[in-house]
Image 1 (cartoon, helix red, strand yellow):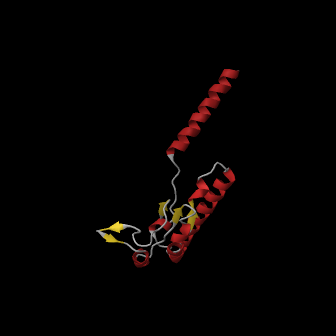
Image 2: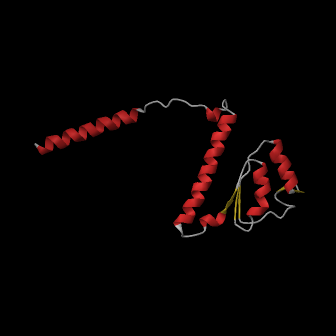
Length: 132
C-alpha cells in the first residue's frame, strides 16, 4: 500500500540501490511476489496509480475524502476503504484456506471474566446488605 499526496512521476516511483524504479519495474516486482497493491493519494494523483493498483487486485482511494469537516464525506471514505480491505482479507483466506492467518482457533474463557463475575456478585451482596 502506498499513502502519498504526490502523483507518480513515471520514472522514479521509488529508489533502491541507486536504481530508478519505473512503473514497469514496480509492476514486475509486484507480479513476481503476487502482491496486492493499494494507493491512497490526493485526487490529482489518483489516476497515476490506477493501473498499478487495478493490475494487482487493489484500488485507489482519494485522500481528499479525509481532508474535510463534512462527516458524510469522511464516513463514505472510511466505509469504502474498510469494505475493500475486508473483501481483500476474505478473498485471501478463500484462496489460501491453509494459511496460518486464516486458521480459526478457539479462544479460552479468561479467568479474569470469572473474577469480574465474583466481584460484581460481591458488590451486589454489599449493596443488598447496606439497604437492609
